[in-house]
Amino acid sequence: MQLRKKPRLRNGAHPITRSVVRKGTRVVSRLLDHTFAFAFRGLVYAQIWEDPKVDMEALQIAPDSRIVAIASGGCNVLSYLVADPESITAVDLNTAHIALNKLKVAAAQALPDHAHFRRFFAEADSPANVAAYREHLAPHLDETTRRYWEGRDLIGRRRIGGFRKGIYKRGLLGNFIGVAHLLAKLYRIDLARILAAPTQEDQRAVFEAELAPVFDKRFVRWLTDQPAALFGLGIPPAQFDALAGDERMAQVLRRRLEKLACDFPVSDNYFAWQAFSRGYARDAQAPLPPYLQAANWDAVRARAERISVLHANFTEHLATLPAASRDRYVLLDAQDWMTDDQLNALWREITRTARPGARVLFRTAAEPSLLPGRVAPAILDRWTYHAEASADFTRRDRSSIYGGVHLYVLRP
Image (cartoon, rainbow, N blue to C red):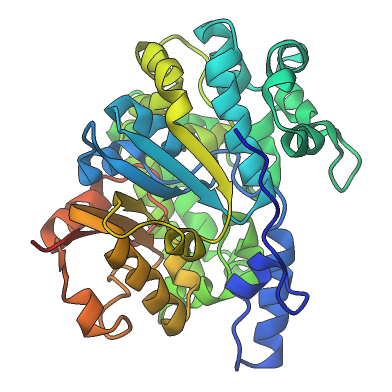
């Protein structure tokens, strides 16, 4: 992995600030955007919250597939290796996510065996992980990545220490889930009961009896109506508006949590374990992301060198590529942040670089695709939207936090 220079700042603005702050909006809105942009520069997702099982089915990854994906926490990027693509380029503006992705790639290549790998990322709370970092990983990391992990966060903790005390309890999302657990204790709710439920019927009974009533509490309704309260979910103010629509945010969140708690057996849903226990289950049959499963270890280890991790803007990276050179694009929910100009610039580059049969997968806070009426017909008409398949993917996405999962395929 080569050391890359940080993206240049234009007019003194950080790249994340340029992506998030909406021009021409009210002062209060811009202040919220700036606050979110500042918070988003640190670690947000120690675990990505898009279901890789759904992703791989939608993308139909083949041995000649060349994937460009937003990196985020790296779980999905490494999980795509199971499908045996030709290459994966993981792109992100967040330096913490870049460091995490590089750490995961190095760990897949340099840790002695799957037991070390699982302990490092599935358990992520052992002093032995710090020793493994020093012995096996640090020598394989570039200077910038080592400096990140061996440096300290805003409250003085060494970042690599997160793997000694629980990395999934850190970052914006980890802190948000921690606050949710504190609220649950204040309302005398035992979140572990969901995970102990033997059937989905029992899961639903626990949700209806204990969790659902919380969303009718006056304080919870007020709190969830504040855009800043959801920064921990990685939701910027612009996406907050799309997610809420004409409803109170408490009701939207209730439905999303109901899906997470009730629509999938907890024995097969590691997202539920992250939400309700702040980590993965520990037993041998615990649900885990594909890249952490023992059955996939050899494939992940052998193919990790196919991943390139770049600190860059997605659109600007595509602009450096030859025409008709990529065929799988994973945008996560980044388009919810974008202006019409940014969307059109992105899709021009996707269309230019797309090979025949190319597929684009993304998620939205609201249910519908956001592209019609915003991306120029001359661009969008070259793509087919698979509405029925997208609705099915949305229904089966175990993370449960998005309104829509969307698949577009390049027309012949």
